[in-house]
Length: 196
Image (cartoon, rainbow, N blue to C red; front, side, top):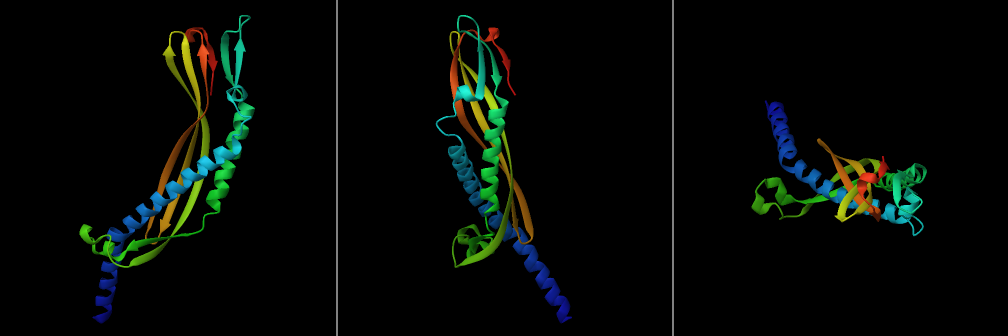
């Protein structure tokens, strides 16, 4: 009889922790990891994109005899090299992450919002795992008569898995960074665009 009581009590405690505590732990870990990922993305872009990378390096502009743009073509070798370097730098930073410890107030165990930030801290170990995907996107905006703004945007998608006792959660962090832009003078219908 005593063994059954202990097993039922343990089951109730595990269920309570799983429903009340672990979602808060995972949420706090996700917030912390999203902040880290954004820092890693911006640091990698800063490191890889130096002063020598410009719009002219990323796009090949074909012009007519009067200097008007006829077509735009992505410079794939340069773009792929940059994307690869950025992805590798971010991956190295993610793999360098150690298991993290999230501290939560003991009051969060009560499930009462008023007490959720009170009491001594309880430490929970979490594991952060991740993957990275980079891609270049183009954005065209009409900014006036015969003027078009062309932006090249680096899109970095990072998946982070937060693994804590009794719970796993995967989150995608998407960061978009404008890396180059130019103003194209000439009517857009005349331009033939060969972009990604």
